[in-house]
Image (cartoon, rainbow, N blue to C red; front, side, top):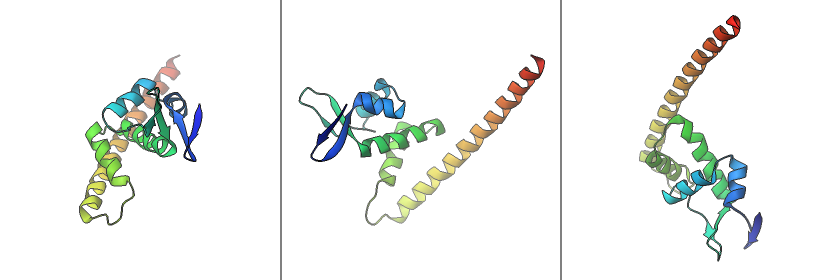
Length: 126
């Protein structure tokens, strides 16, 4: 269910889960560890999320398969959030995360190629 608060489109956790394909448990966990704190809570205590939260969760979901820790994800999210006057240290840190992401993706691509070869072998025997 989507509600409007102060002219901002918001959603409850169920809608956020449906839109992202993540479980309620996963979203609650990300809230508890500080990666995705709810924008607000209703009088009844239900979490309320914004479109910005949806976008943030999408980035978290993209980082997850690359093996980043929760701490690294929090660091990356803070570096990706728009700010005035990003310093050289931030750029260097982002460059290191990019290098790690590229390395992890290449490793995943090799694993996928091996899986494809195995599936081909199985298919040829079936």
